[in-house]
Image 1 (cartoon, rainbow, N blue to C red):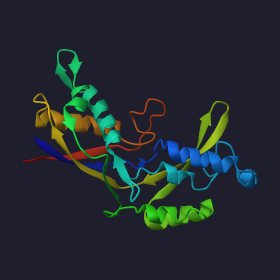
Image 2: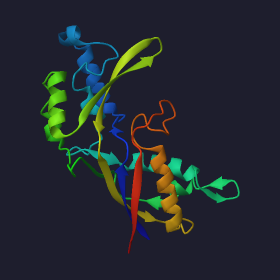
Image 3: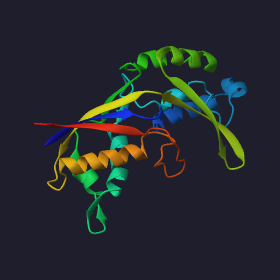
Image 4: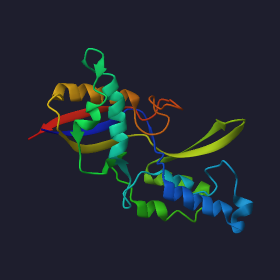
Length: 217
């Protein structure tokens, strides 16, 4: 049995990829003596393109990683009882399978975001990048966040209307379609991305969604 799904955003999505390679590139820029006068510790506007390293992507366009959706389903699985006091936590992971690493991500009026357009801004000042992102249909969301006794500036790519689409194979007989629907529905309450309701450190109202599921023969 296969299930095709579409996650439809009900609250804005904030992307924040834990991009190890991108983080190293940012650190190299900050340590470069030529950038000393422009480098501000704890500020995502330094360098002004830091936010670009937070965009989930497959190298060509913005996507939603499968692992993010699986993490959301893990939360959803903990909310549905399997039997006695056991939930669908484990089966939400072992009972569903997809061969893809990246899921289709669209925003606004069914737009896709090409990484070529994003990287073309790299040499622009932050204010210019803000305007160009607005022209592309999304926002750069800047917010002060307390870290210890200091306040850092965080910048996240923000999408007001968004969708994630994909397909999964159901490999556990204990996962009936009605159960999968419940797991997805609870997952939507937990959300995706940064400052989502299910975030263990910084819960917020972002990234919540509703799901449309269909069986595929």
